[in-house]
Image (cartoon, rainbow, N blue to C red; front, side, top):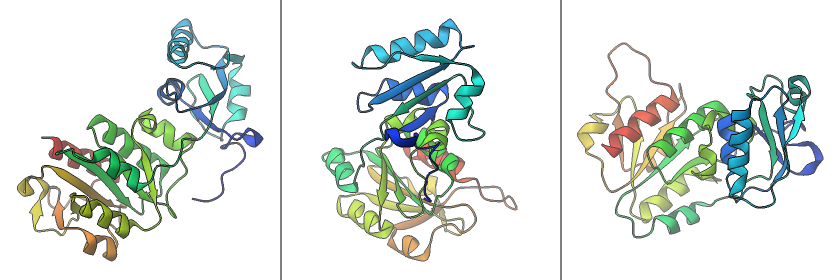
Length: 256
C-alpha cells in the first residue's frame, strides 16, 4: 500500500482511527488493542453510549469517551469516512505471520485459510474478512506489497472481523501457499476456466481457498502453485462475481 495520510493513521500518536459502530465496538472489546481516544458524536443516543460502555467493560484502562459535534468528529477522519457517530484512535494490531497460523491450526482436522492474490481494494479485502469470520476461516492471507493497510476503510468494511480473523501479509504469496501445502492444506484456486466446480470437488479437511483480483484473476505463478483449479457455477454469459461475493460462496461451499 502507499503511504498513509496523517489523518488515516492518527497523526503523531501512533494509532489508527477506526470508525463505524461495528468496527469501533469490536476494537474496543479487543484486549489486544490499546485505545488512545474514544470520540462520540454529541448527537449519539443512549444506546450507542451504553454499547461503548459495555465494550469497554471487559478491558481495563480504556479512556473516557469525548463528545464532539459531527463536523469536528468528521475532521479527525479521512474525507468521506462514514463514522455513524463513533470513532476511536487505537494501536495497530500486531503483525501475524503465516507460521503463526500454521501453529494455531496444528492438529485440526478441519481448517480453512483464504488467500487473496493482488487484492488491493480495502473495501473488498474487508468484506472478504467479514465472510471469513462468518464462516470460521482461520486467516486471510494477502500479498504484502499490494495489500491495503489495516486502517479505517478496511476495518469499516470488515465490520469488526479484523479483531477476530488475522490478516497475514506475505512477502511471497506462492511461498505462503507452499507453506500451507506442506502443513497439509489442499490449495484450491478459483478460476473461471477450470473444468470442475467447487461442489464437484467435494472439498473437506484442511483447505486453502485461493482467489484472484477481479479482472486479471490469479497470476500464473499463483495458479501453478495451487493443487487444483476450480470454478463457481455461474450462469453462462454473466460476468465473474466480485471478489468478496466469490469468497463468501466458496466459504459457504466449504462449510456445507
